[in-house]
Amino acid sequence: MRVQLRVTQMQLRTAIRLLLLICVLAATGCQQQTQVVSRGPAVPPNPTVKPLPDHAPPQLKQMLDGAIAQAGVTTGYDPSYVALDYPGGDVAEKTGVCSDVVVRAFRKAGIDLQKEVHEDIKAARSEYPTRWGAIGPDRNIDHRRVLNLMTYFTRRGKSLPISSSATDYQPGDIVGWELTNGIDHIGIVTNMLSDSGDRYLIVHNIGAGTRIEDVLFAWTIKGHYRFF
Image 1 (tube, rainbow, N blue to C red):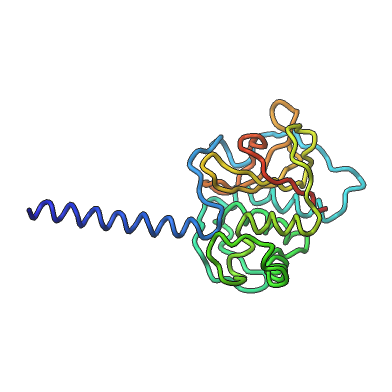
Image 2 (cartoon, helix red, strand yellow; image 1 turned 120 degrees about the vertical axis):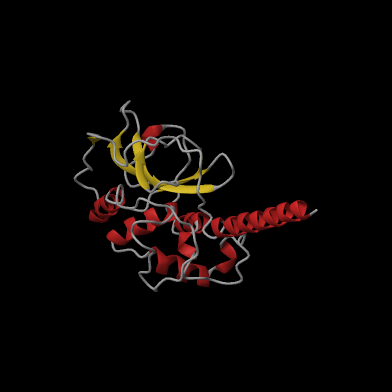
């Protein structure tokens, strides 16, 4: 009887830990995905880099450079809720989630999505998702939620058609996916070509830090945006 009680208590503690983990993962809407397409180096060796057009706006290059520079620097993944400074708040550079890749890249181009998204949610709360049970804007987490970023880009008129043609996705484009388990994910199209040469690689963080990988069509695309 005592053995049975100990097992029951252990099961209860395990269940509580799992529940807490699920709550933490749900905080950002950009949870860790264990089914990863590739686990090679963070940056492909000797990639073919296609120069941006001469007429490309400076902010596009700044944003793209800021995204690519995160690969190999952000080596962890942690979706925990963190109280941040405002504006310009960020978690430690070595960690973060998929949305942090986008936020950090935009800051290199002089755009603080923490501030922009927070102010837009305050102005148009009903336009944004409420699946997290939030009762109001939260400047610590709103910009780190994939669906909020997608909503913001759409409201800014930056949405493009979703296509199955790789040529429609250009360097600097932002892509949102639905992963195989229904989780949302987001990343940025680089100007580095895949081995096949027919599509660009993606910079993103899906559980093992920021990496540059050939994953454009690895999951169901649900959003396509061009900001610059």
